[in-house]
Image (cartoon, rainbow, N blue to C red; front, side, top):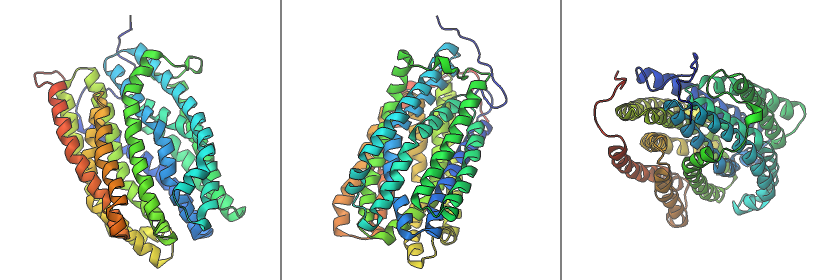
Length: 463
C-alpha cells in the first residue's frame, strides 16, 4: 500500500494546492521563463559569435540546424513533460512512493534517450541536411555543427528531465541557477574557441556541449541532496513499469506534438533555404529574437501542467478552473508587453547578429509578422498545458497535427509555390496558430466541463 503523507516542503518547493493562485503562478513562471530566455540567449551567442567573427555561411549553418535539433530533441523531451505531470499529480495526491518511483523512472528515461538520440543523430546528420536543401557553400558547416551538437545530447536530455522533476515540486529557481552557471561558461568558451583558437561552428558547438554538461551535473548534484519527495538516489534509478506507463500516456502525445511542430518547421526551413543564404541568415537572427517571447508563453504552458496536475491530483477541481483562467490572463498581458518591446527594438536587436543591412531588413519582416500574432499562441499554449495536467495529452497532439502541421505543410507545397516570397512564407505561422487556438479552446471547454465539475470545494485559493 502506498504511503500517503504530506511531502516535505522547503522554501523552494511549493504546495500549489493551497493559498492564493496569482502570486504562486508568477513566482513559478518567471524563473521558468528566465531559464528558457537565458538558455536561448546563450545559444544565440553561437549565432552572434560566428556571425561577427567567422562568416555569414557559418551563421547560416547554425541557424539552419535549429529545426533539425528541435525535431530530435523534442522526440524525447515531450516525455519530460509527461514526467512533470505524473510527479505533480502524485505530489498533489500525497502519494510519496509513486512520486519517488516516477522521479527515478524519469532519470532512467533521460539517460537512455540521451544516448539513443546521440547515436541516431550522428548517423542521420548528413542525409537530413541533404533533405533540407542546404546550399553547397553552407553544407559542411551545417554537418560539422550538427554532429558535435548531437554528441552532447545525453547532457541535454538529462538537464530537461531534471528540470521537469524540480518543476513538478514547484521549484523553478534551482534550474535557473544551474543554467546560468553553464551559460556563462558557454559564452566564455564561444569567444575562446572562435577568437583565440580560430575555430568556427565546431568551436561554438563544443562550447554548447560543455555548458550543457555543467548544467546537468549541477542539477544532478542538487537532486541528490534534495530533502523532499523528489530526491534522487543513483542506486534507485531504474524503470518502474506503472510510472513508466503513466509517463508514456502523457509524454508520448506531448512528444508527438513537439515533433509535429518540428516536422512542420523543417518544411518551412526547407522553403527558407530555397530563398538563399541571405534569407537563411536573416531567419536565423530573427528566430533568436522572437523566440524570447515564445519562451514566456512556454513558461506559462509548463505552469499550467504543474498547477493543474497538482490540483487535479488533490481533487481541487474548482481551483483547477481558476488556475487556467489566471494563467490565460497573466500570460496574455505579459506576452503583449514583450511583443511590443521587441517590435520597438527589433532593428537594434538584429544588428547584434549582423552588420549587413539586407539581412537586417529581411529579419524585420519575420519578427514583425510573428510579434503581431504571438498572442494567438497564448491560448494554444496555456490550454495545451492545462489538458496535459489533466492527463489528456492526446487532444492537443491531434490538434497540433491538424492545425499546425497541416496548415504549414499545405501552404509550403501549395500557396508558397505560387507566391514564392519571404512574406508569404512567414504568414503561415499566424495562420496555423489561429486555427489551432480556436480548436483547442473548444476541446478544452468540453474536457473541463466533464472532468472538473462545478461545486463546493475547499482551498480554492481565490485572489
